[in-house]
Image (cartoon, rainbow, N blue to C red; front, side):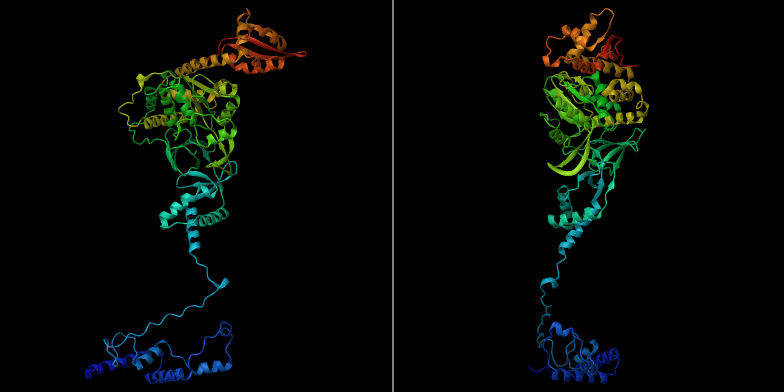
Length: 609
């Protein structure tokens, strides 16, 4: 069907075509006639010179000959706008309006030509996809932002998680789960562990560690700044400056938390923080109020790892009240997923594993303690370096652990002298009528922690008054407990003499038990009781024969010495025990080939001087 175009429309199209030609010629820098001539020559050259086959890569890279260069100079190529002028002259415009030779409703669309494909490359020429490197870079960014490489006092390389405030071993398994979770939350996709390993290896090689003070467990002490720290929640701890009473929140302090530790109970819901909040501990449990100053002093001392720790021994029949008292102390001092353990470790590796799980070592219903077990407990109380295990696997890191200890038993099970000298034994009696939580306290644990923190602050503020007082050194392993005890009584507005009265009463019962466990000391007491002068001075060999009749009948043969050297060793162990019973036992040197020992009745040692 023929399409008729009116003359007026045809004239408008021709004028628009001429305007396009003038614009294209102006852009190319020539006249309209020259531009049309170049367009005609382009048509002629394309007809005479059909497309040549594709030239190989080797031939394409060669330099063209001089003859080829002269021909290229004669055949001036059309520019971009020259090509458009050529199309406009032929009626093949790219504009949206219809050409005079076609109609928008009858013209067929031009066939879609596919884009030329790049030649397939193989081997080293094939480009590698960058998506894997992009994942590695993203993981590296997470590592640099979240973790810090540090070293502790043993020069072991560790990782500090700035988000949670925890110290981790420098192994991939310790961070891979957290990094994968953070990557998923940021980028919305998973990241393979191999990419995390590549980023982690690069992080450990490129980032230099710095040395810092790393604390283990619930509490820490910096000897340089003399600041004390108590770990409260993830990434936060309570810091108390030297000589001050009130704590402030500290972020970014490295702590190695035992695996089963929990956060301290929140104290923000307690309106009035007072030291007297700790009195509720003795109102709702079977813990004796007659020894409250001793128990609170031990709890405060547990948050002072720079001082000599003491083992708390709760004595009494197994009952629900005993378990509740045991659990309350554990929840206030060191909250954990387990309040106690029923089985005691047997060898050093098992003790080290328990220390990595709990800061306060807690054992319930202990029937017996072997000398080896007592030695391991004493070493953990004084602090010792151990190999770190992460989720049961040994890692290349050495850390120092120091743990307070609490046990419950029917009767005292401590027999080794060095541990007995650092043990506080408290008798717990059954009394069900006292176990009612006050109605005004919504959370008893939070109230107890708030009260203990106030007492801890008072002790820290006044610590310089008793730290170097030599009168406390007389009490051996309990010296620091006595220092803290005086300040605890002061914080509760009670007389210091009341603390010393509780301490003296407690030590008498403790020493009586130790006396029953030392047949040599009991024999010396009986022998001096029969001596009118109250003084015995003789060689060790004669002591051995004179003491034999006073040996208790229930003494096993292996516990009684049979040589002079063995008796001298027993004398050295019995000296501090006899001192509390008003007897001074001392070696007065040699007289010829024999070593002399002197036992003399004196006034009983006063606990408060």
